Image (cartoon, rainbow, N blue to C red; front, top):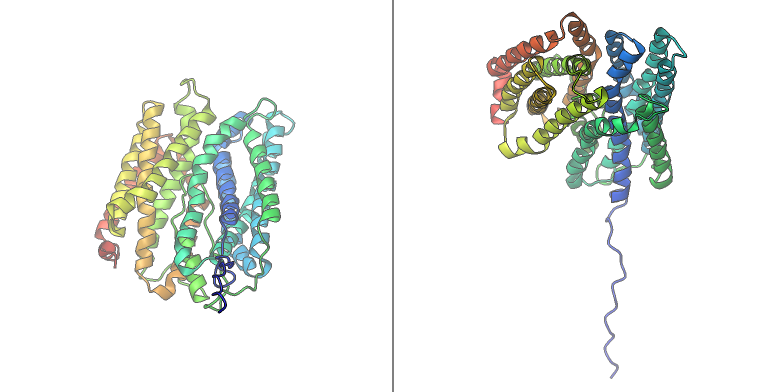
Length: 456
């Protein structure tokens, strides 16, 4: 009688049951870095540009116009790049976005260095810098929808929400890292242009890493079980205080599941009050945030701390407060959208008024952090409230409307904030505080905003 056959070892390797639903950690890290470097570099630039403007004698209003034009270019180019992501491949569009950011930063650095050295006149510096910065507005928008689509196309529905939320946090993390590292790149030879040269180099490294280590993707690849390709959504340009609200991630997830993204008019009566609230809150934040660097230079001189470091510390404090609120406090308190909108604007009003009356740098940073925390409550409040106001099939459309509103906040508001600042330095903060109190009252009294109380 022959002996029993011994059990054979299992040589099969664990892996996804269907191709296309595997996203290795190292690939996700690369995609995350593509968004992180653009957000960090953008806020690093915003932390040193007020000082640069004063040194080269570029008017404060001109600095605001530069950012407004860049945001306007971003608003118009973002939908185009989101569509191109579907037909030209995700990795290629991520490289376009990061490379556009890197080239823009390199040209900005060269122009600023020439202006600081006196090689070109202030007016020429302003014109060339506006063109160089505009390249970021045109091409930088390509990275975000492509990154979202790459992640959405390689995760299961159960994994997708967490993956997209983590990806969206790259913007918030970048707003902390950018101002934190910018002062270390202000070196003797390149001076204030150093941070721009540094981020241009970092962008080049990220582009090469994407080419070498991120697998190329087929834009016609279909998600198993859905018959649709993973898609990405338009995102607002990363700016000071402009941490992600989650609208873009929500749009990417929904279009992946449904295969289409229905248009939803911003005048739709179900979401119009939320969008009015969001536009008003975002505009007040943009106006006061843009003036902050100049306010610090003018009011906090004599502290012994270099101006770029003071601005960076303040921006880090605000970004840290925003992330603390959005990553922890909101979940811990389980606040409804209505509560977020009501109390968020009141907190922001208190912090904004505190900036106007800050007697020292410590009080200013504390006030800006309080204001940022308030906006950190308010912005997700109107995003979630507008989402709850429509059906599941319309989530992509409402996310598009929310993203459009978030982008529009940074087109005119920065210039208005600087214009008010040039009249009276405290004026934008006084008016913003009053506006935020009115906005809180609007959230208390509007029936549709109050209807989001139960989270329905």
